[in-house]
Image (cartoon, rainbow, N blue to C red):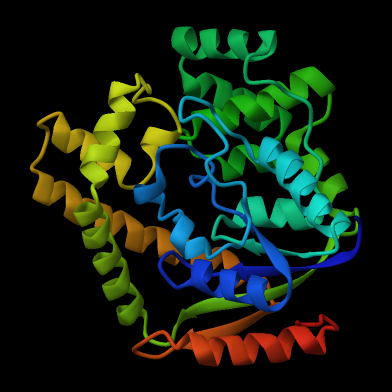
Length: 317
């Protein structure tokens, strides 16, 4: 439903997006669409902080636990599936509330961005992978620099997946990734988004809450969750098991470090991720920020959010 108004609750990890999104859904007759690149995987509820049935409080949640951890879930696939969810929510007379901190996925969903053709199992991709093994990624990166200099400049040599994707797009369509992205940006956004952003006035308070959340995940059984995924023959090389929390605990289970060291690494990586999330989100000047003080005051956040949404013409029940 192009140009329809949606609500987006955004912010760094551990800032309370899930709780506020559910409260807004209850008040504004909405349903939640998760915009988290890891919550899409089944069996990873603890490490991704996916909402429990009790936390959902009767509010339907979409895009949570819909994919097998062995799958590679792309942003293009996310946009296609999430768009269908959003449009279905509209069709039933309800308000879609997008909740999550994966900025790339969120921006692509709101924009309704199309993606260049390309299949991870295509013949072109297989040939490119063979070339990486035979020639090395440096050769293919130099090739990309000749074809699409802006994309090559953005991509580090360690980002093999996106280097291959950029080359695949060119060899399959004759259009560079830069050209495709520029064309996509000229298209008006699919949805009219109202953004509510959550964070802390003092960054130290966010860091402390992230550390506390990791400790809670460990208490809830994150180690056992990782072991269950391994027992289900989920490859260690999958995107799912490269996620923060899983990769570090795997190394501890392999005896490469102590569990205590792994947990400290999870905390560090989570704090670094939160910083990257904020950097991404701050480029969006349309976000209405609610900055927590020492503690998160959801009553205040609901009051402010309600004022913002009603000023945008949304009605609550």
